[in-house]
Length: 368
Length: 272
Ligand SMILES: Nc1ncnc2c1ncn2[C@@H]1O[C@H](COP(=O)(O)OP(=O)(O)OP(=O)(O)O)[C@@H](O)[C@H]1O
Ligand SMILES: [Mg+2]
Image (cartoon, rainbow over all chains, first blue to last red):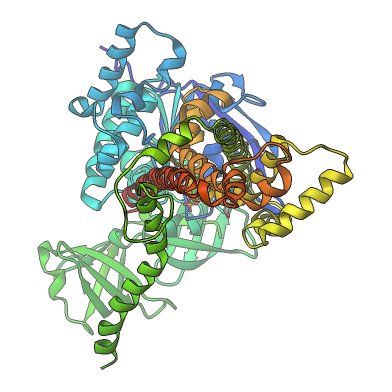
């Protein structure tokens, strides 16, 4: 049986050249993206990069200064929020305090004038989906943060929107609940098959939940890709840095063509890499990046085709992993290395000489 | 040392202060049920006759009716204007917001006689006759600062995302006001109505200058004070107004506190 929730690859939302200015300040600068039907899509970026602004443009709470948004083939220009096929889970949840849980969830259905039994059935279905079936009569101020979040979800899902928008829905929850809700949200999305757009500034949340991630900086989208590609093949130094640590090494461009670059570095020697999207050879230099966990400590007799030697200058213990700072004679900045503790990386003395192995595939060329 | 001193003095001071403030007021109900027409101790006996005499007094009843009309109308108008102003103050940023708020709040510190006389001059300039309408205009002016203060504190705790959530769920602007904004603001609105009504109820100066031939209760009372024989009945009337005002203000305060508590738990829950 084919998975009914598999992405169809059909475009659900098309954002084309959207700019939003607040006076002289440009909050969004010519943003374009396509979000597919049934996709879990995340907008990831630091505070103030324009994630909420973009989400509010999609929801219809705000209008773009330039450019347009299409939802399910329909241009949204001039369409007010109450007539768009989207629903939103607010960061503050915005649960109506003068209504109980059931009334909150039924709020949008009231305008559809369903018959009583049908309305009741849909409210109960939505509450069951978020596992709140037993709390229908509670008032908003008698709910915990996690429960409010579920009510907000149920209230939006009961409308059966084409797109569900979530603005940092988990940021108000404590760490443990947040991790549990990440799994549940992902599950729920697969189950209902609705397109989800999640705004977050937490890279782990985006990596764990999304089909694809758009990383934003200063009102622009820097890269759109699957979590794995975003993490392993970031195209700019900024993206690489935002998604966890990365070692940066400056390199010379020895050769180039449309799809690949050959870079020469001190330390890592000559490596052939993919050419990042939009890369321009400028003055013949580039930046090469490698994630700390892609560097491996070589023990006594271990040998590798690709080795690099250095001296441990610092060591940080994190329980299951150890973080080593290794000075390499040819490199201006020391490399950071993350090693699991199964083989005793936590016992490597500071000051000792070690050798590191690397996989040339783990080296990526980065745009500045 | 310091502490010991204040501990000895403060309660004493507080008791004296409260005594000065409330003892004279307490005399009002006491003498109003005294059977002697002269308000002196010792009391002669318990009697409700002064209250009964009010009932058949058509002039007094007419004044009471005027007071109710003026109070209700002033409370409604001041609250409606107050809602608009409070919403603008809390929701939008606009140039001239501070000076405008200042102007609206000015009646709070202006002597009422100044307000009354200037209003009278303006009305005479326009050739408008004095009536209950003119009293209502004056009372709205006086009630507005109180109404706005109560309403602003209500609207301040009102997160705009409630209205956005309503629109997002398909509701129209009008439907949102009806189903979300007004019900959530109800405690502040009721509180503003009661406070305004109470202020209008015992306002003297503006009513005195602007009421023309339609006296309100405070004007009626003032007129009666010239006749010593009428004093006990005035005391009875005063007692009724005192109790009424106290009840209204208590209800208003309870509503305000409930509203404050609601927004507090709201904020606590959201940002904890
Ligand atoms: N109504 C507005 N008027 C003026 N500037 C605004 C307005 N809304 C947003 N901005 C500005 O636009 C920029 C982007 O804001 P936005 O809320 O989209 O950021 P964000 O990415 O959601 O950040 P956060 O993670 O902090 O929520 C910010 O610098 C903000 O100050
Ligand atoms: Mg935001």
